[in-house]
Image 1 (cartoon, rainbow, N blue to C red):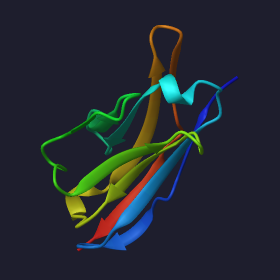
Image 2 (image 1 turned 90 degrees about the vertical axis):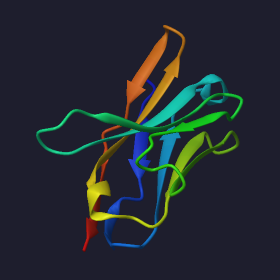
Image 3 (image 1 turned 120 degrees about the vertical axis):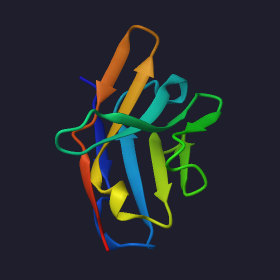
Image 4 (image 1 turned 180 degrees about the vertical axis):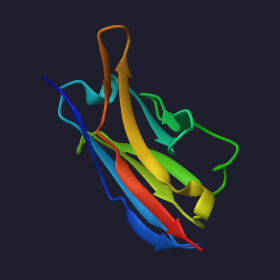
Length: 116
């Protein structure tokens, strides 16, 4: 069964940068709509960024101008470049892949902690 695997989380200081990666083990990555979400304890999971199969992107207002989502077909991987990180960015970040109604998978999440 196909699955998503995130990596790249860790502890960084405010103002620093981090790049998250999410590899899709399936065979149809190029056709998948990919998204990054984040969640903190006691709050709802929120959409951070998304990218279509044609590389059109959208961002939450809170990260616009600081985060960049991209994808590599050759590596079946979606990335989230996070710059000028703030303590408010601390959360578990999840990758999600969707293809119509036949595929909808979540990764297990990777912890991002930003210290002040």
